[in-house]
Length: 241
Image (tube, rainbow, N blue to C red; front, side, top):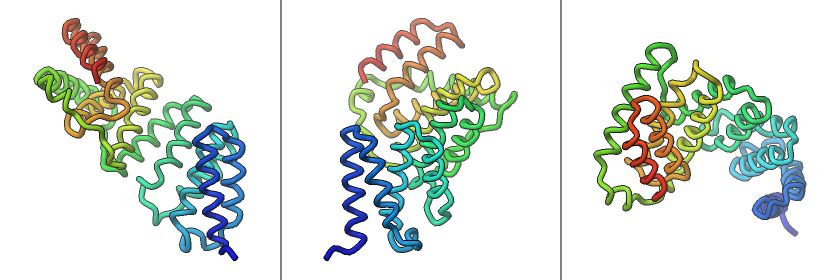
């Protein structure tokens, strides 16, 4: 007969297929069945399968609006000290999205987002005058960098597949949005998130958020430097990405 782990993996596969066709209730059922079959030493015996089941369960409970259940799954993953931050990305994102989009706790979401980014090797300065000064310098440099980049370079950018770089970019995109929504105190972070995303696009290649970040840079060059021509040029470049 089949071993218990085979049944667990079957439930994981069924849950993933259900998620892919947006059958979220079914996905939740299969994931829960798989989780209930896991042994008590699951994080030692089957860390990979356990992580996938819990991460998927957290993601789908978010879609269903079952936030208390999602928190239970997330906390289980985030409590595992042996798992690096990158592997916990989906649990962090589920928790962050609930914090910001459901609870409107933008400030808490920003601080958690900064902590996760730091774990992934992407640091940001503290706020106040220093933060604003660094944001202004970064904005000036990034605008100059894009203007100096030949059109052929933009056209030859390849799509990024590195999981760590993709995770950082996903978090930067959220950080930019939430910092903008959180008001003046976090304006410097909104700017730094955009400049970081544009710089990463130029040095690494195309991400899902590359065009959006370049358009945002155009908007900032208009608002901060009153430079209509640059804003227009960046907008055109973003549309061609």
